[in-house]
Length: 167
Image (cartoon, rainbow, N blue to C red; front, side, top):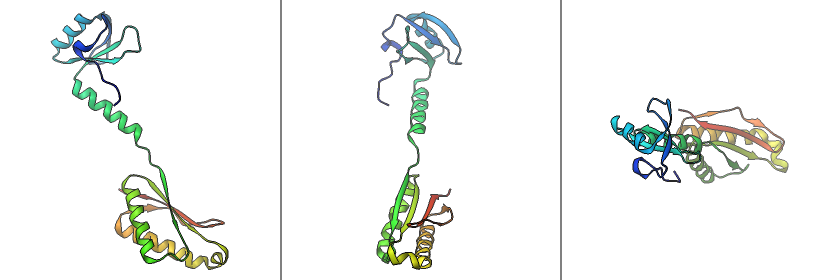
């Protein structure tokens, strides 16, 4: 959260547009009257927005209000990205292990992982060998972390497959 939320006596305006704890609008009232209504319900007067004239204030529990804002902010932040891992035709066992660890890191962060096997020149003729390498990578990845996968797709430059973490 970037800005400070004004509550109770921190509110500067003389009049406020008041919203009840039930969500009903009570209209424009003086700040002292709004504070009195909030104290009667043993809740806080929270300035929701200061862009309006008079500013909009709500009677609510400050802790719950902050929690709801943080939850809403977190929901908008989280969007999965597509991360790429590129395999080569003659990839060594050690390099494959390193790429598996990288894929696990991406999947644990909630990202999708696109695995590409790029084939060049004569490698394109040995596509069965390349497809087996991709399948071996997927099997080893699946041993480490449960995943959902699409079918291996054959493109003009090689093979690709998209995987996500299964719950």
